[in-house]
Length: 222
Image (spheres, rainbow, N blue to C red):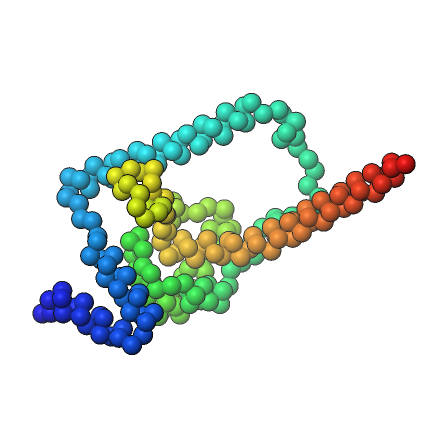
């Protein structure tokens, strides 16, 4: 069994001769040495504190939105006829598309994954058809399994040097399961062309309106 000193010496020797690799190795070792370890009671207290802070933050955002909507004029949200392209349904997902998605995702397993990502990637011939069936059922029925809506929330310090005991100094990062990420990318692939087309139409309309205003303004000039 090697000691920690031997491990550090080996890491530095492997990076010897490469300035960039030596720098990254040194930074990695320094960060690992500076890792803060909490007692179980402290962990429970921190979890409760972070949970309350972020739940309250979301509640405040919702209350602010509701208050702003109540104070807004009804004309601001008046119904206007839709003249752009329509997205009435989703096209079926293909096994080839899911296979390519599995091949493109990193080998980073979430705690919510029942199976490791590496296994899903290496056995894509098995998992791609299964994920394709699940995705098509979800798109056809308009339902997304509640299990796949759960996420592992990690709190990352916004900037080095901030007080680690204050939840306000952290940014919550949600990590979904691999299946959820695959579904998310599949839906995005369907929505992106439609939204891009709508954006192009809106930009064209804004440009036409601007040219019209310029022309009318010029016509009024003496």
